[in-house]
Length: 104
Image (tube, rainbow, N blue to C red; front, top):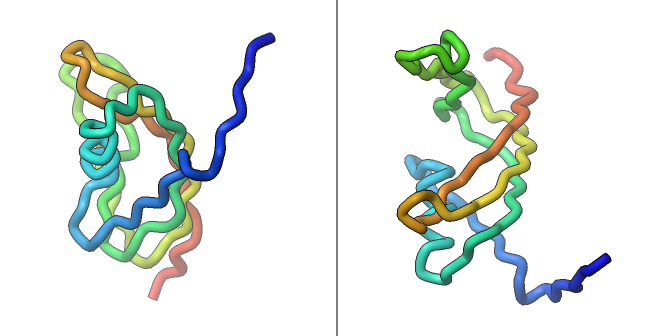
């Protein structure tokens, strides 16, 4: 078995501002630092955030994303990885669970 220990200087906390897109911010953060692999965990999403919840017909073309607009603040747990795409640019792949958001 091979392993290495990380130190806290390798941990980053990124706070998004209103209107920012999760995958764009994380990919933009990773690019100039030459980060190829990065575990990702999320915290919460504000009211009126748009969540892509999957493709309407699975992977059958044409791929049509289904959107869900949050009606209130929600807790978000997510696990993902940033990895290099075909052009060696950081690309985020993430799965999230969204909970809470009692209707007004």
